[in-house]
Length: 223
Image 1 (cartoon, rainbow, N blue to C red):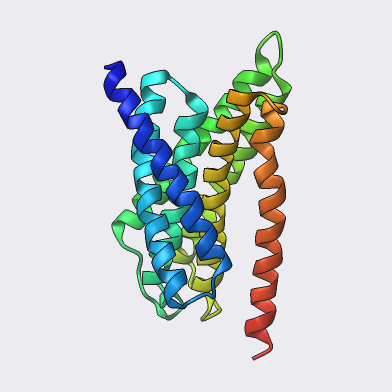
Image 2: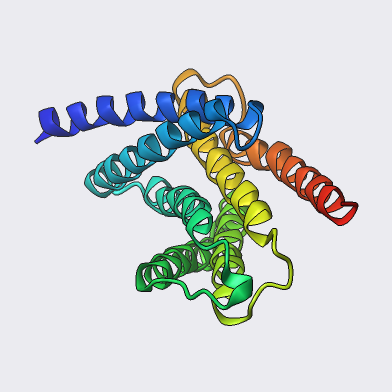
């Protein structure tokens, strides 16, 4: 069994490296053009492999953080890709059943993160970093499901809604993937505090998402 898991780990690492590299190309290239689309497709497929292998390894090793972060990272990418097929939600287009299912599963998985935070908080030797990280990722993941499922119920007012959703989700998935990669490197080589390593990509990436989203809003609203 260890041999099988080890080989799955190699696939996971390779897929993760491809996802990080192709994601960087997609982010830095001109949106809507050939390079962006090709890199985005490679990134999406690589992330699916990362998700499947990640939950397999996490289940075998009982790694709670890896298991749960696999959901939030892949759901972000899934929602980011699916919104390209749901560009007419503002005109009454309806989401498919699997859009609802994916959002619900991600919500439940991240609710587990919040429960983990409560557990860390009530233990005799309170794990403050564990509480903060679990609560932060859990609430963030639940909010991600809410944000992505809200347009299924209430029609978006803006025709370009899909653009900001695509941008935010794909970037969110990239941040989560880079978080897992960076945390693994820190654990292996011990060059900084592991809890800081877990939080740092979000501390840098989320302000960037906010900046780019506001820039997009300004771009469309001034046309």
